[in-house]
Image 1 (tube, one colour):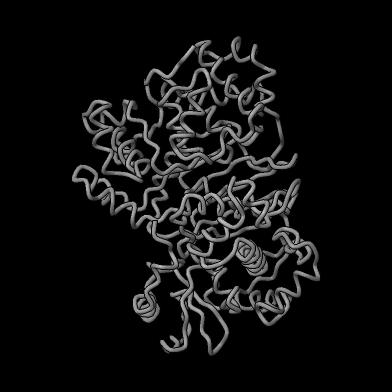
Image 2 (image 1 turned 90 degrees about the vertical axis):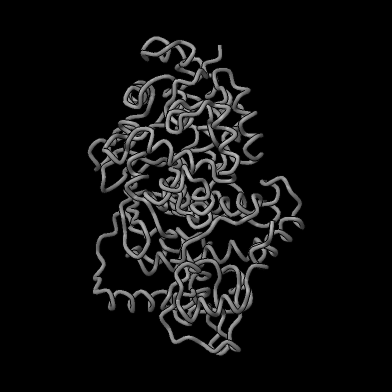
Length: 506
């Protein structure tokens, strides 16, 4: 694969800078040598002369070169794009979650160990694709999150430092003075005056989650609504709310459409050190790292998919807050309707989940952990109205995850993940592909045995598999378009990921 840094043609970048072409936002950053500031290509400031600029493939590369981020265009609001290299993509997903508050940090050695590669190889890949070292990328992520929290929230600055991952308030203040030429308190007062904000409400925080347009909010919210787990999630046309749990704490999040190509997330969680992980999980649920340009271009090359892509530009693949939760939801959906799968999921939460109180009507309990489901195996068989083989499949999965916590982590690629999942009794190819598609975020996952997909094109599973070869590496997005059409979403019906594919293995 060609490194992103090699794709920065100075002439193209400067032309995009002059025209403030939003299509290039987040694809490169401009370092202005006369000011020492780096900007997004859409920055409203006066365009610098071509001889005074240098282009960088990432904000981290610009900061590593000694540039300070622009106060006007706010680089932290630039839409992110999934790196072209799968290993770098996985590394960036880990970095986005922030250091584990209960475990190790994110230095180069620790990151390389989690990825199963050498530290030197990881540094080489980061330099080729992002123009910066893993350490520099981690630091820039922390800096930009801190600035976003200062600008967009009224959290006390000590809380901002903690949430962004700084180990001391002194270090936090020093970084702000170095990068922005002013302390965080002065930046906040300036922003508050411009926005007419007086502060006050410190219960929770509200953050923007930028994406690369176009974004099909009605499409993704329809899928989330159809497959919401009663008690854990509440979904309407205007927003998505759910209970979250991390590190023994629980709280709520609410996501709704925002402005300026972003969603708005309202986070009410008692442990602020988990903010990076919460934001990363929300971005995964709403697939905000997708770049619809190349995806839609590939799919539109098929004459059968072209009108679907034109009708729903920017359609995303919804993800999951927790991979185990979604995997269980997929198993519950084997050979039943969407509504029936939802009722079973709600009953499972009522039977084995942990009741909690929230301020949001409808959010009443936490999804059961793998350990709890293993312990409650008899309850599943006796009280859930479904075949014993399906209840056994849930227990088998729970036991496998309890014994191998990384079973539902993206790591071995699509084929490796599917093989590992199919080794669990009760999980067949359809279930494994759906788990890989929605929970493991594999963009090329595709279940050809899905009856809805076959019906959408009038093809057998073998014919569908052959047709889907031209949709690589974005078959998951093609599946979303076909699921929408197969159930007549344009006419008001709800989409489905359920199938009557026979995945039940004794």
